[in-house]
Amino acid sequence: MFTGLIREIATVKSYRNNILTILSKHKAKVGDSIAINGVCLTVIKVNSDGFDLELADETRSIIDESKLSGKVHIEPAMQMNDRFEGHIVQGHIDCVGTVTKITQRENATDFIVTVDKKYIAHIIPKGSITIDGISLTVNSVEDDNFRLTIIPHTLKETLIKNYKIGTKINIETDVFARYIDHILAHRQNSKKSLSWNDIDEIQMSY
Image 1 (cartoon, rainbow, N blue to C red):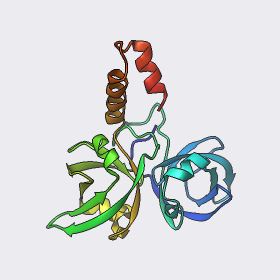
Image 2: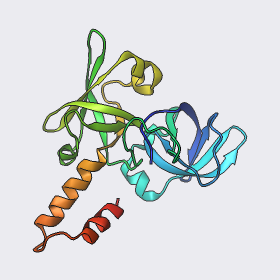
Image 3: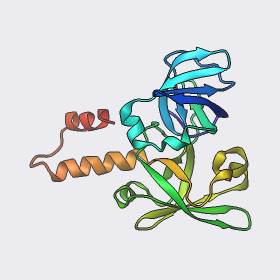
Image 4: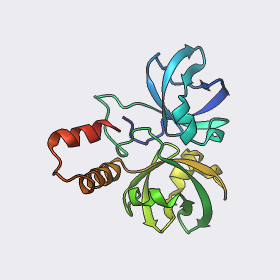
């Protein structure tokens, strides 16, 4: 599990044959889970200047692989004794969105992000969302897009400052919205009420 709080901006050294090599100050261990631009990956090798991670074909089919180059956000998985901040992030990308409008305001910047309409139900006004691994709050939602308002501190400390019209971003929607939607859909398609075992199975499927 992650929190969506970026711990470091690292650099991609190489990405080939499903292996992503990261240059980083973070001292990883083999088997560690680390989110790279919001994508939960497993460390398979530790190098003197960083670490290697492997991407499954399923992961590659969902994310925007162009995000696996240059500078990237990284966040090691949360440990049991860590302070919980941000929001609950799984590192499971739901879709790729596109920045379609940027508006500079007096003390913040608005970003309009367009997504496939089928994901809008899981994006909640004033709810949480993860953008390239960053925990953010959704300001408003329309039929096929949503608005983020980014304060200067967040722009300065993350790669959002480099976003332009047309930039692709990895999106993880709110985990609770996904759970509720899945449970309700399951109940509508079933002739019987859900048992606690049914709910446990649904939760374990994520």
